[in-house]
Image (tube, rainbow, N blue to C red; front, side):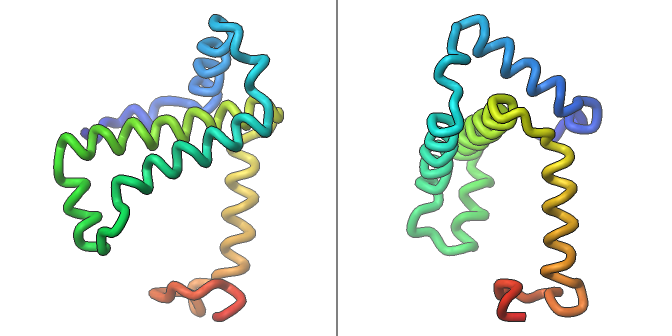
Amino acid sequence: MNSDLDSHTKIQQIKDQIINFATERDWQQFHTPKNLSMAIACEAAELMEHFLWQDSKESMATMENSKKRAEITVELADILIFSLAFANACELDVSSIIQEKMRTNAKKYPVEKARGRSEKYTEL
């Protein structure tokens, strides 16, 4: 189900859509850092549940099952929606914080030390 919508949609458009959805329902009052962080964690747990007790190969096979893939897609969407709602509530610029984190990760995990390795940066 790949589309090129990602390459044509700005993050702000999605953030605005999320704001409008919540505003129309008077849900902004519930969109606090505490509530949204908890919602993200709950949805992440629901995503993880699909892969519980599977090995890596089985988890990849799960993604080939169209019914399971659809269910997993819904959970990922929930995580992303709540994450962007969190950014909205806290007035965070998503592009800026992601770019900054990627710069930090590049320093922590230089290619020459981290390539093909799964250890934490403190263990490289």
